[in-house]
Image 1 (cartoon, rainbow, N blue to C red):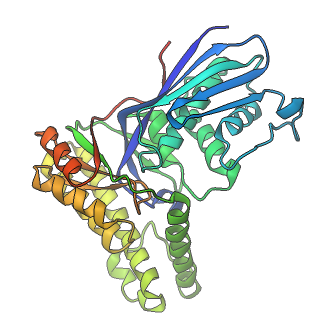
Image 2 (image 1 turned 180 degrees about the horizontal axis):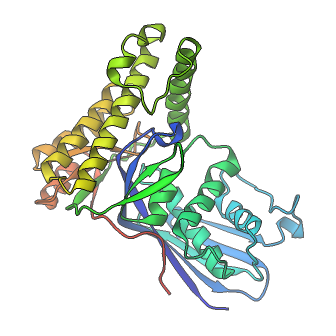
Image 3 (image 1 turned 135 degrees about the vertical axis):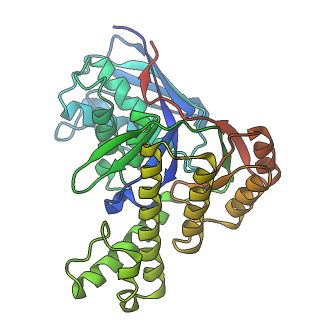
Length: 365
């Protein structure tokens, strides 16, 4: 019985918002804002978890509320009950939790802002539980990502994909492809400094994901009724033009936006792998991606646009929103003078964080 300390990073999505749940590729990057879970073993079966950043706490028994489980699961008592779901998920993988812990979870990640605070918490929590049980997957970041995805998304029927968990668990910059098979490719090109900007605008991730996902899938279904071999992974913008007339205007823009985002993401991957990614090309691609998110998928906001424009005027080479959008965070690529960019974001009404690419989930004992 030993004390445990585990941390996991936030992430920014460099390229590929609203792609992972469609089976299209994404390029996220882990950043050096982290969430840390510390635990001291108890002699009983209770998890007592303090969450001071949100003035909250959780307490539950390994055996469930009042010593009862339902079909072997600890019952959930709230929406998105990630701490209990994490225990249930690792137990299904054979983890043996023999005693509880007094835990404290602290975070430097903006909450509900598009930097993946909830996924980072789930990744850190899964790693903590696997280490506590000395499970064989405790040092396997891909498996940790998958279990965190189960505990956060599948367990509660949420509409999200698996990008966030992969980025937080794996760290650095990765290219994630989902079809025809799940594959993660590490991208090793060195990037300079970024500045994250929190718009301080609340967002409804579930609502935004549902609108964009349902609208895109509805459009795909409509197209496939006339063109059964239609495939979002292979169709080109030129080929789609003659088909779009059967869709309404919003569906047309969503399909165009999805295909354009896919192509930008693939171009970025090719540049990373060829070591031809320059700071200017990085900035140009970010700006092109933001134009799609703003003008075709409609997930930007006037304040996010203002913060991005201000950062570029202050010397950033490019910028875009990150996460589901309609609030939350943007980031700017600022390999030179990031302090000036951070100041510009603050003057535009945001909260700024100078950040760099970071390693993934880790034990800090």
